[in-house]
Image (cartoon, one colour):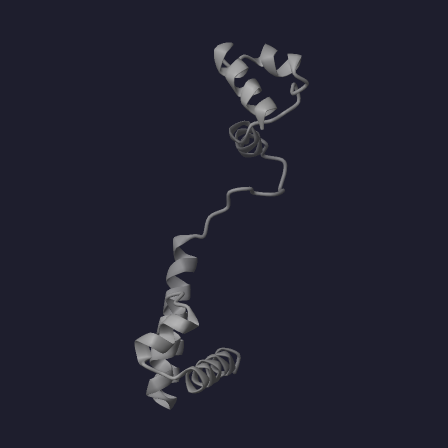
Length: 125
């Protein structure tokens, strides 16, 4: 760590020049910005996209699918609707038990059954 800190101080003191990188054996290191700029400018390649983000359409479609799934689950068992809704909001199982005031053994069985039902409904086609 001391070596790293020394290099950082030296790099900042020299103004962060390319000569510093060459002198310290890092002439071929590539910054993330340079990497992404090169990837965008290379029209002939169809390779790895390091910072690919989800599109708005994918996010909206996933939200619709989850809402429809929750609706189907609630038609079968209204109690499971609450469980699946909380799971879709990334709540932990322990928090779900507290919020729904369920005992541990019965609560974990209900969560498992709700997940199984949602899985079956999602994969029914």
